[in-house]
Image (tube, rainbow, N blue to C red):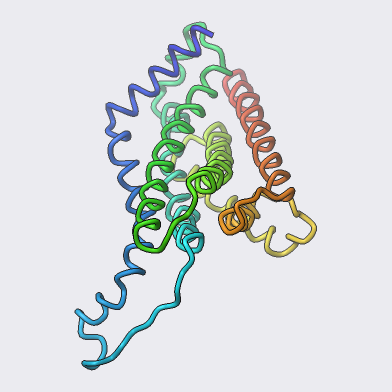
Amino acid sequence: MMQWATMFRKEMLESWRNKKWIWVPIVFIILAVMDPISTYYLPEIIQSAGGFPDGTVIELPDYAPAEIMMMSLSQYSTLGILLVAFLAMNPIAGEKASGVSELILVKPVSYTNYITTKWASLIVLVGVSSTIGLFAGWYYTNILYGSLPFMTWAKGVLFYGLWFLLVISLAILFNTFVSKPGIVVFLTIISVMLLSLLTQVIGHVLTWSPGHLSTYVQELLQTGTISDKLLGTAFTSFALSILLVVLSVYSFRRKQNG
């Protein structure tokens, strides 16, 4: 346990030295507030750009607060996933390519500790940063569009975070397969796209597929209640993430000893 804590502190310190604790939250904040603010001021933006004749009145639909929050989450589901994939492309693959991992593992370092500390540090970085971003989105939503209960928002953030957990776990697994970070990003994005596509095609059968998380979280934001389908999907996402980490440890150990 002491070894795990020491290695985890090392990963967190490295993230701080690389300024990740500064720029990653800023990027997530931008992603979260971009749609709520631009949508609210869209008529003024268009008119100031001279896009319509004088006297033209632009009326946008009255968005509910839950719909605005889903705009922020939709940015997370696209650009946010890409950001997470880039953050998770290097912790193991990069060290394997540079030979750093071999130097670390010469010491009596557990393979499990090596993998899980990198996984956990990414979860903390992405989890805290994305939550800060969504809090900014929630703040502007309440100011510009109306009140969304804090507890409803918090539940939505908690459940949606499982999607990032799954993406990070996927990326960690691919880190153990290949030594080129670019390939890790490619495999992670392709896997997420295939999962989403599979969910769209046979989603009526895979009702607990992680690909349904966004849909079920939207229902949660609109109704304030946690459905059985959301609980089932959350369980599946969490269990699959743990399984991917276990496979990552097994794959890494086999590569190092093979």
